[in-house]
Amino acid sequence: MQHSIQLTQRGFGLVESLVALVVISVGMIGIAVLYGQGLRASTTALDRTRAVNLAADMADRIRANRRGEGGYNTASAADRDCDPGDNKDCTSTEMANHDVWRWRTQVGNTLPGPGTGTIAYVAGSPPTYTITINWQEVGGAASYVMTLQLPNR
Figure (tube, rainbow, N blue to C red):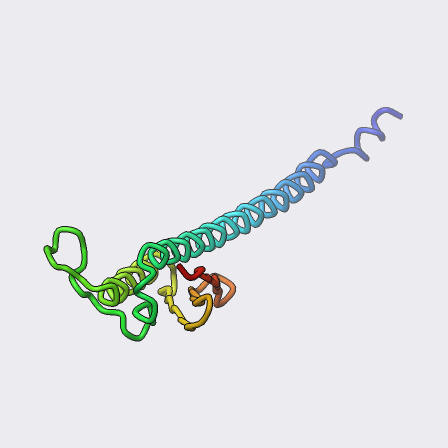
């Protein structure tokens, strides 16, 4: 009777091993997928953080040069040699043009796609600036918009 029991259980350990191998393999594939999704999410979060910081940087530049007003229109952006050490007295408008040029360069170099930045100025009481940043994410296009209103002095 013992002899017949041994014959019926032959090869059972091999099947268990193969099932365990399949279960572990599926688990490892799941872990790899989760790792990839986490990596993608952290990259997206980093790009969004960079966009917020770049918009805040431009908002600070606008606050520092309130007289620049319409000079922050993106179309007029150009290098006006207004960096410290250039020994040039720039007007408020020239400084605004230079700020936008430098900022757009930073946006393009920092965000994937490459990133683009625009500023829309609306004169009024109070004047309003709309700072828009666009870039490419893994899933498609992304953007960040900040509206800045400065009280009149």
